[in-house]
Length: 180
Image (cartoon, rainbow, N blue to C red; front, side, top):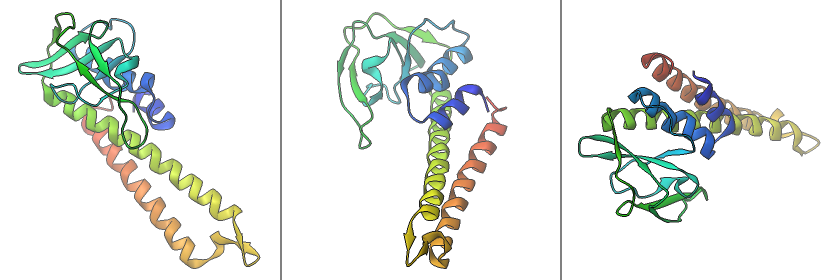
């Protein structure tokens, strides 16, 4: 696993980490020198619900014939958020500077985007497992920790199993892609 993906797994959804793991990765893959600043990525050509767009300098957006790199300085940005309270902004590209074309297909974006989301989920599940175990050790009921009750132990095992399954799936996806 690359350092960018490890940092994302351990740090959670953060603009700089997602930029390194997805936006910067796409630029390197396309053979384009990173322009500097935060690079975010739109999953659709209409550039709706773009993560961290209000903080980004650049946007990679799918187009009819591949991916385009757009400078966001003159784009219009309508702030929004997802259910978790994370920034998901709508970007109007009609006033943006003419985009540069990246020699990549939208499929590359979709696959890498899915991998980045899976890494985020694996990290979140790992943290959920840690917090659940900690709570079960510390919380007392009837004079003993709730982690000593068989029913609670069964639930903790299920949480650990699900977290491990997601981690294995992420590792398999990384192995298929050469660990990038």
